[in-house]
Image (cartoon, rainbow, N blue to C red):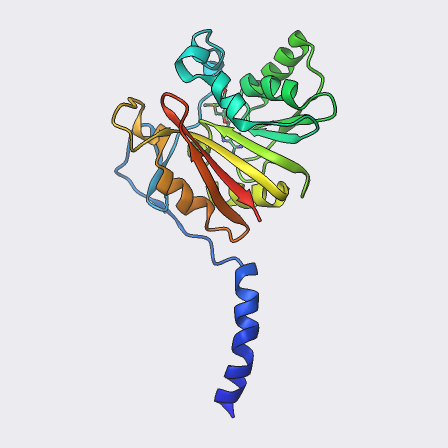
Length: 238
Ligand SMILES: C[S@@+](CC[C@H](N)C(=O)[O-])C[C@H]1O[C@@H](n2cnc3c(N)ncnc32)[C@H](O)[C@@H]1O
């Protein structure tokens, strides 16, 4: 009788399983760690220290475009007018206004950061450039405070490796995306020996896939490598 009940329940369990989240992987704290990291590990990766607003000038350095080919990154995103974009970890808004131009006039960009000083800088940069379709949002380390199901594209450039609660942030991003929306993750290539960046500020493609495809709603779509040092890893919400 018991085995008959199990037999009848099994197909129902199979149907439900893709919709349910497994328990989040635990964070681990180690005393011996990289001096540029915070000693907290997620799926074997050490989380980096957050870049302070005092260093914002570096994000706006004139040689950035030629060094990182930020123009190719914006081009590779193929944004369309009318899209709603979230620039998470926007900093001074280097990418926010460039994307705002692509999605104008109907589309907009949420510029999200956890440092109010960065958002002040971002707002100043937007008014200086006469950009009116960037909305600044003060997030927390676990929540980008975006409306549910409202975003077509989330961009993170050199920021995800700094999130001290990456699981919670990724979960909130899944909720904020529209169905069919995408996450565009840009990180320095850890697996590329030519990339001379501090280790905790890099991420391998395999690590990124492991962290994002934990969520059954997300699938890896493609990885692009037109940039000199970073990869562009795209995940799509089913
Ligand atoms: C290295 S800067 C990159 C800024 C920008 N993406 C760029 O490429 O110019 C990283 C930014 O991420 C922000 N940040 C760190 N953790 C965050 C979180 N959980 N949510 C939102 N922003 C975060 C930091 O405050 C900082 O402004």
